[in-house]
Every structure is written in C-alpha cells, then in structure tokens.
Length: 262
Length: 360
Image (cartoon, rainbow over all chains, first blue to last red; front, side):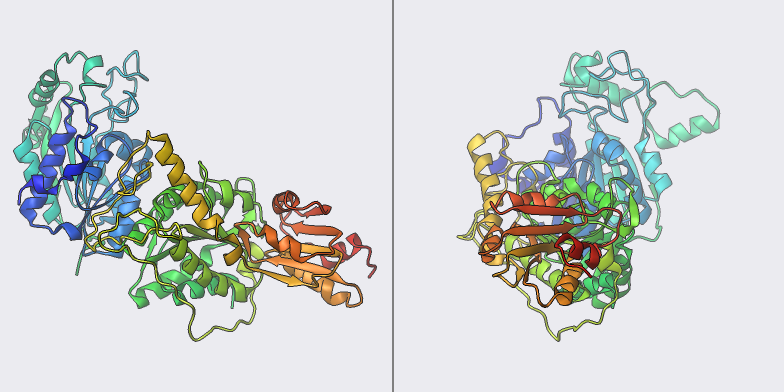
C-alpha cells in the first residue's frame, strides 16, 4: 500500500489551483494513515466547506462533506456513535476558526478522539480571497484592501487552552515533519489538532507580493521557528522576529478523552 | 405520563440509539429522559454546544446506521435549518422534534404555539419536501414518534414531530404496546451506485463502515455521490427526485381522522386545538359537526378535504395566524374560516361554540 492507493482515481483532476499547498497536506495525511495501517472501511473523513474541505471527495473511504464550519459536530456524531471508526477531519482557517470556532473549542474541550488537520492558508480561497481570522495583521485581501486591521488567531494556542490532547504546527514545506506529526496525532487518544500552514498563490500570494509560488513557500520556510527555540528566546527576553511561524509539537498529553474505542 | 416523556419512550421503542441535543424549554424533558435511558441501551446521548451542532451530530450518527433524533423548540429549530437542508440533500434519515412555543424570537418559552408549521415545510433554503406529524395527545406523542422513525428510514428524509408546549407538558394515561412497528432502512445493493434510486425514487442506504466508500456531500451530486454543481439538468433531476419521492406518496402515507363526513360545518385541526373541537362535538350531540383531524400535515393531504362532500364551511382553529388555513384554502372552493389564537392558550370550547352559533 502507498498513499496513492487512498485516492479516488476517477475523481481526478482535482479543483485545486496550480501551486496550491493543500495537495501536499492531503498526501502527508494519507501517508500517515497508510503507515498506521488503517483499513479503508473503518476510516471516515469529514469536512466542512472551503478549499480544504474538498479533500474527502478525492479519497476512497466513506466521507461526509458537510456545511460550513460544522465538520466537527458531524464528526462527533460519527465517532460517538461508532468509536471503532478512525475519523479524520479536514478543515481550513475560515471553516474552523470563524464560522466553526465554537465547535472547535468544544470538540477540544470534550477531547473527542478525532484527528483534525487544518490547512491554514490565511485567506478564504474558495470565495476569492477574503480576509479570515488567521489573515496576518496588515495583509491584503479583497475585504482588507488597506491591510487587515484585526489581529490573527493562534489556532494551536486555542486548541491547547480548550483541551486538545495533541497539538502540532508544521507547513507545506515540512512534509516529513508534518507526516510524523499527523501520525502521532492519530496514535494519541483524544483530539489531535495539526495545523499546516499552506501557500495560496491564487488568492493570498498574488495580493501579498509573492510573485511565484515558491516565493511564498520560501517565506513560510524562512519565517518558521522551532517551538523550543521560540520558548527559549521568550524566556531570555530576546526579540522574536516579526511574523514568526512557530512550528513543532506544542503539546502531547493525556487528558480524559471521549469516543476512544474500548 | 408526560407528553415529552412519551415522545422519548416512543423513540427508544422505535430503536433510536443516538440523541444529540441542546437544552431548550419546553422540550428539555425529552433530552433529560434520553440522557438517563440511552446509556443503559448501549446508545449515545450527547449534549452539544448548540442546535446547529445537535442537528449535525444526528446526521453523522445516522450515516453509521443508527436511528438518531434531536428535540428542540422555535429558536433552536431556526438554528437547525441549514443542516436540515443538508439532511434533505444527502437523504439522511433523522427525526427532529419541535415542541413549539410562542415566537418570534425568544417569545413565550413556556407557552404553546404552532407558529413553526410553515418553517418546518419551507425553512431551509431551496426546494424540497418533508414529512411533519402533529400529535394531539400524549398517546400520539408515543405513536407518532415511532411512526416518524419508520417514515424517515423509508423515505430517507428528516421527519418532524411538530408538537407544542401543551401536548409536551400534558400528563395523560397512555397504553404502551409490547412491540412497535419497525421498518428497516433499505440497504444499498452491491454494484448499485450509491445515489441511484429504486422505483420508489429512494436509493438504498450505503451505511458507513460496510465498505461502500460513499462520498456524501451537500453539493449537487450525481448518482456516484460526486459533486457536479454546474450541470443544470442534473440539478433539476436531483431536486425533482428529492421532492417527488415524498410528494408522490402523499395519498398513501396520509394520516388523518374523519368525524361526521356528511356535516355541513366542518372543523379542521392538527395538534392541541383538536382537543377543544372534540369538546365542542361532545357538548353538542344534537348538531352535526364535522371534524377533520390531521395527524400528518406535510405532505398536505388535500384529498382529505373531499371526504366532506357536503361541507359548506371549514373552520380552522390554529395556534398561529392561520398558516394551515391558508394552505387549506388553496385546495377548496368552500369558504374557509381561519380562527387564529396567539398568546399560548388553547381556544376555549365556549369560544368555538359561540363562533358556530351554539349557546351554552
């Protein structure tokens, strides 16, 4: 088996734009699943609405492509009804942090045994590039034409505060690390949240001075800082460069969880 | 037994094994009863963070093959609308109980109303058809809840139990049967596309975990279940099938009671106002008064009107501003008198008697 065996070949070509980072994240997730040795008939993908949420439609297992922001409560119904299923949620920053924000914190609080992979492109890609709750301060989008005036959410800190057992952040550049993190999340009982920063050349990059796809990937890479180093810097009172993307494992704990198979 | 408890007991007897809900007056006793009973039956009770999530959770559970239900009232019902449309589009069997209270908005949490009758029919966006049952006694809270599950599984639609605060909180003696009818959800046959309908326009159900590998989406989809949202013909075919699978069965599944079909004066009721009318009939044995009592309001049983071949006037007391009177009126040339009542109390039998010229 390889990750390629999990794709619905008859659904290709996909809808993602050239240079989109989502495909990388889906590959990493499927690679992790393949390493886990899960059976297709015991695996269910659930998603909401947006670019990221189209992913389950390209995968051969049973899947629910639901309403905007609501993937987690749908997944809760599946998992609490059948704890023996492996349930993976694909979501994005708009889906999870804006319209689905309340479901996100409650799924983390319940610590339901789900693996949540969030493709954070910092923009509403599907609807043409509007600002999202993770659009950086000052970044341009169609609804923040003079630069976003709103501070952005840190989704990993949010997940930790709300109670998730496993939290990690990587990027579309760090494919090996991301795959390992997703796998570790799958192995951890309770809610696992893996945030993957992705480039969106069509709707984010071209409005924010990334002429080429790789310019944005390089920006993401060069602004990434390991969490340990970041914490050290903070402790020493050192200056953390602007727009740093903190990556690595944020937490791995064993709070009481729901929906864990007996 | 209390009406809400009878509803919960009916659900359990029907095999409901998943309840996702959010507390709201006057429906909360249903959730509370399910919270006690479901774990003992290896079922799942979960209190969700809101009614949007409640509706989502029962749809998720239904795809794993469970009979699933939620219960709410007006404000929660409004929140559920988007996911109700998702259940319609994805043909997910589920039961939604609405113990109606006075609206709009927070309105009268502890008083009865029937103001959501049109919302349950048309509340989610787009065109579709659904099934709505209206109990007028505690016994019917039990029986119609059982029936709701069987209809949901047969037609693969959300089925609404549209009760009100009076029926929900009323206590009456009821007969609990030893067994209840149980129609199994029709399973998808191997080799058949997951959204390919049978002759009854309903596709077999591809339960999760059985190896069907089905993709379920709220987008317009083809018979494989794959999104296909810009094909006008496919969209029309899909929506027409979702509509017709219920509408073509409206005569067969209609559920109503006819009293005195040769009367000239006919009351038409659903839900709790039926009780006031029954009192009027009881009090005036010398006067021939007809009564059409609808236990299923949607799909609307317009053929039932013709059972009253001598009708000269239909009188429709409702706990709203005439939502069903208006629907009734468009199916008959006989004069229709709407008797709306707001405020949360039933029509008094004396009010109805005065209306038809009977002095106490």
